[in-house]
Image (cartoon, rainbow over the protein chains, first blue to last red):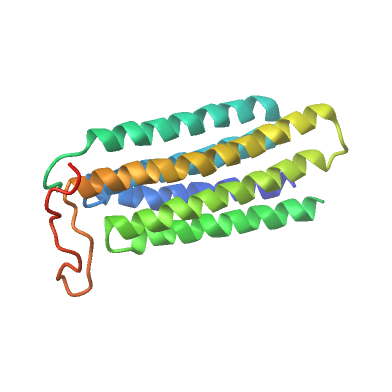
Length: 88
Length: 118
């Protein structure tokens, strides 16, 4: 079971790397915001998997909960900030 | 019980990969947002259910119940938060006159929208 968690965490890291491409080369700034949000979601799952791997579950659940709330608020604030005419 | 965990987590990984593929391959911001927001919300839910099942399968204990409830709370919170964040992002992109993609380049809806409810 332990090795399955590690394998899942590695696949998630690969997915984060893939979605980083759009985060860097995304044509518009909004693609970068999605990239950040998308990586944030996967980081929550990665945090939980690390909790299960190091079997300190209770600590990592709280960290993941706090991070998911911050990720949500961050996306809201950044999307409200980037409203301007003729985005490029 | 642990096979159930594996099934849920593989399903979660599947939805994460499809969301990533959609995020990379779709031509336009709106279509990418479409793929990403739904993909990772469902992926998160499946993953967290798998982990919650894994906690409880060691034998029932009150402490484990609290942890799995917190896990399910993260999934419920993300089910509420993701559509809101997606809506805010789409609204700001729409108001920044980001034209939606069309196959032949001609705008289907009249673009840029005249004023709207500004």
